[in-house]
Image 1 (cartoon, helix red, strand yellow):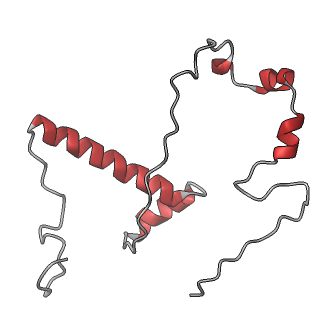
Image 2: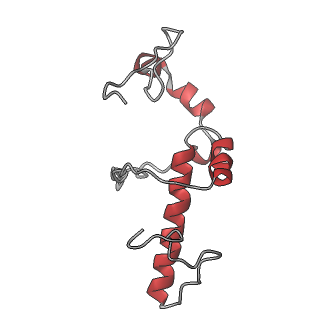
Amino acid sequence: MSARRTTRQSADPESPARGQADLARLRRVTDREIARTSPPELANLPAAFWDEAVVVHPPAKQPISLRVDRDVLEYFKAQGPRYQSRMNAVLRSYVAAMRARDARGAERPEPDGDRSGGRRPGRRGPV
């Protein structure tokens, strides 16, 4: 695999690249237009709403190679783009649940099916 990254340009020169805001267009939007198109839960926010806001940077991701069952992968891919992020969210939710259970001192359930500790038959050593 080449180390060089490639990008595809949009056919519409007025359209920004995916993931990038069209800053010129955003600067032209009026307060009235913002209020008209904003969701109802954002209406009438108190003046001090952002006073204690802090920037939260997402944790760095670790690239890995992961083998999953075909049906599991097909399920996540069928949900649309960003399936890997959804898979990560499911794993993060599981980790949070297990940490909460550990904090309560509860026992972990035995995994279903394979009791080999993740090793393939005939294989020795760590997974």
